[in-house]
Image 1 (cartoon, rainbow, N blue to C red):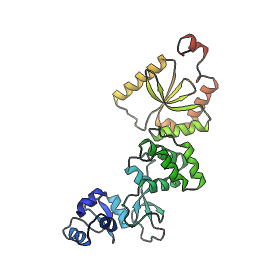
Image 2 (cartoon, rainbow, N blue to C red; image 1 turned 90 degrees about the vertical axis):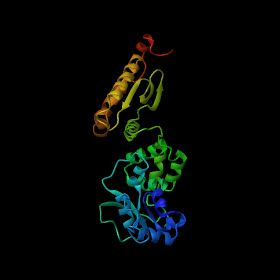
Image 3 (tube, rainbow, N blue to C red; image 1 turned 60 degrees about the vertical axis):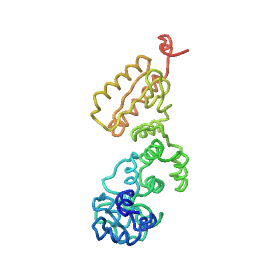
Image 4 (tube, helix red, strand yellow; image 1 turned 30 degrees about the horizontal axis):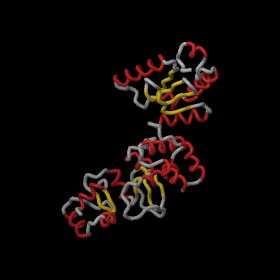
Amino acid sequence: MDVVETLVRHGGVAPVALLAARGCSSAQVRGAVRRGQVFHPRRGWIALPEADPMLVSAARSGGRVTCVSALALMMVHTPGSPVTHLRVPTTARRLPSTPATIHRSDVGRPEDPIVDGIDVALSIAVRCLSRDDAVAVLDSVVNLRLLRRSEVVDVLAELPQCYRDYAGLIDGGAQSGIETRFRLGCRALNLPLRSQVPIGGVGRVDFVIGDRLVVEVDGRETHAPATAFAADRRRDLALKERGYLVLRLTYAQVMYEWPRVAALLRSLVARQEHRWAARHRRAGLVEL
């Protein structure tokens, strides 16, 4: 097996033990080093000259990229982190010179890739993040079909009870972290909420509270393309034609103005505006 080809397949950085397990001999590795095709960022590790600096830094620390940093590479929704999250052995003394969040753990084997697999990364992330952020990550993993819900539950089963309880909060239908945040906020308010609800002539909406209060939660982007803006307004018009009450919230409103949003939702529910009424039936908006 070619050393460079093997490294390319594993992200450009790998432990020598992994190369050996893939059939690369010590002589092949030494030859690639002599030719300048690869280098040793640390004893026992090999990297391509053009490898991602984050991965090279992880190798120099003798660790693996893990937690939200690993999950982000898998396109999982994460809250983001200004520094790389690294998993190092519990006895590690040589830590990275660049800022990093260090997770000490002895899981894994010497031949494991530089980026932790999803099971390990997810287990560490659940313990690292707040409950809401952790549930958003779990939702995303299921939504992207990286793991089945039952497999996520198996990961949680290895953790303390406080984290195992997250299993009851997972909704693989959530298409963004902000949807998870909104759902958990409504759960805390004990609102009758359904997610990803199909409505005839309109399609799926993010949420329906009760019978007719539709809530659409926009993503982080502040300037949606004109075509998306127009499509959203067409949907809003179609929903209102059918008697639905439509509330469209921005990312900032859910994240930073939740008390105001919660007060509005409680007020609408208290006035029974989330339920079909006799006037809607008289207008033919509700099928009898």
